[in-house]
Amino acid sequence: MTMHSSPTRLMLVTPPVEDAEAIVFRLMQAMAGGDIAAIVLRLTPGDDRSRIERVKRLAGPVQANNVALVVEDSALVATRGGADGVHVTGGPEAIAEARSSLRNERIIGAGSLRARHDAMDVGEAGVDYVMFGEPRADGSVPPLAAVIERAGWWAEIFETPCVAYAPDAESVPALVETGAEFVALGAWAFEEGQDIRALVEATNAAIAAFAARKAAR
Image 1 (cartoon, helix red, strand yellow):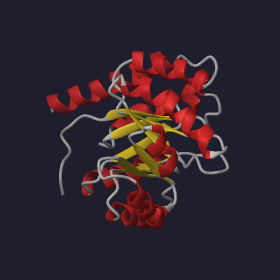
Image 2 (tube, one colour):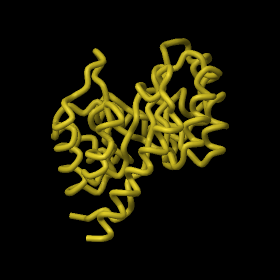
Image 3 (cartoon, helix red, strand yellow):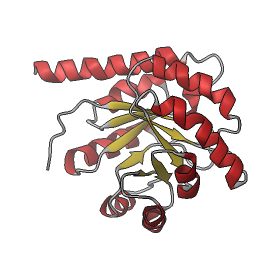
């Protein structure tokens, strides 16, 4: 068992992106708010070429800020678009498939993990992170208490980093306290009228406050 000493970092999970131009401004605002480790880019359906073009449009500005760009569910689109990796939602087989088409230096993360054994299976498949708590296909999110329990269990026992998905801004401090290596803000952070820069600042402040309390113990 290892105790993780490095502080939690922030990730963003975009809403499904159809127009790269429309979201690039929001991403720049977010990155101006402080430290972000990675952005998981979700794309609306479309032909590979248009999806690759969207990734190419976003990869430059994101990577210029030392933020990793990870594309959901298509290793081909991720690779050809110049992204840093792929976020897989399909279990060990999908991870093996992604690995065969990605070079080793690219990130492979896993989400849509419904049970502990699902997480352990993908962890054994050698992913770079596992994500807990992101919305299900129907848009519903798991209960916060369940996500806190799952992230805390994983962070305490396993080496593979975990991401705890925050369903809203209020849940961030409790998720930071699980010891998860990353906390993710989802599509809600990109909504009209939401100040994403302030959200990123506030999340990093919550992370710093927890780290300071921990150091003072």
